[in-house]
Amino acid sequence: LPEIAYVNGEFLPLDRAVVHVEDRGFQFGDAVYEVVRTYSGKPFAVEEHLARLLRSMEAIELEHDLTVDGLKILVSEAVRRARFPEAVVYLQITRGHAPRHRGFPSPCKPTVVLTVRELMPLSSELRENGIAVITLPDNRWARCDIKSVALLANVLAYHAAKNDGAHDAIFLEADGAVTEATAGNVFVLTGGRLRTPPKSPKILAGVTREKILETARTVGIDAAEGRVTKTDLLKAEEIFLTSTTAEVVPVVSVDRQPVGDGKPGPMAGRVYEQFVRMFAKA
Ligand code: PDD
Image (tube, rainbow, N blue to C red; front, side):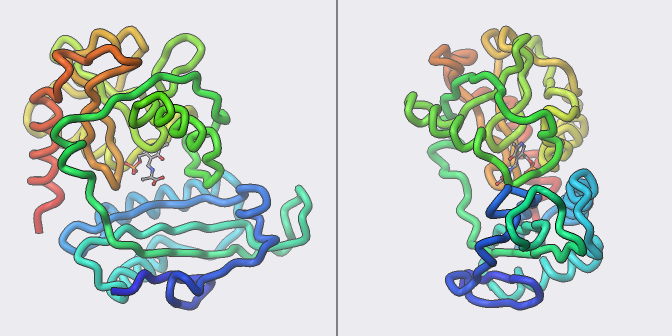
């Protein structure tokens, strides 16, 4: 089955898709993106993802004539053409290509790039045994609510985690407040209450995060936004990360200290099962 791409109006095989070397996405990271997955071949929460993409474009003042409806058709068409059992769609919009200069090009002709790959679900090993994480100072910019392609700090934090024998990193502000992980939001169970850091410019408001809050409340779990600190991580009964591609990932140690008894707890499993029941069943 083909891995396909779409560049500025044209579908083509992924390995033939190219953009200009002076594209501002490449030169400056002057671009925003979304990642959408399918369940049973249908794009999941696509309107939420595309609404967030439009908010990201608005936040960086990217001039465009794209609409949620138009992009929805594009995503569906791409998924249909690729014919994978389950797919991951990556959609990136840049401020176009222009001779390298800080100023916005005027007029701006955005570059629209989309790729479709087969979804590789999180390994059952990780889902069942959980992951180790380290904590790191959040050295990212102050607008992590914008889904910017400029992910260098996330890339370096992930690499540091791997080098340390862990699987991911959780970012902390100077006062110890948890923001998020390198590619997902954080949920913490303390005293039987499930908490996730509140929406703010410091985190991406994850689509999965929202669905998990809804899922948990549906089955009567006390789940809410609330400040989470490093101290909470260290005394948590459970911790898990959420994202489009990994869904729900139990965290079993933080900075080498076990979370609870060092095994994934029942809450992560319960929430994940209910999430699948509510959203991932055909
Ligand atoms: N990333 N926070 C960060 C920094 C992320 O990169 C992501 C997802 C999330 C979770 O958002 P959502 O539930 O809407 O996927 C939170 C995507 C999957 C990525 O970059 O591949």
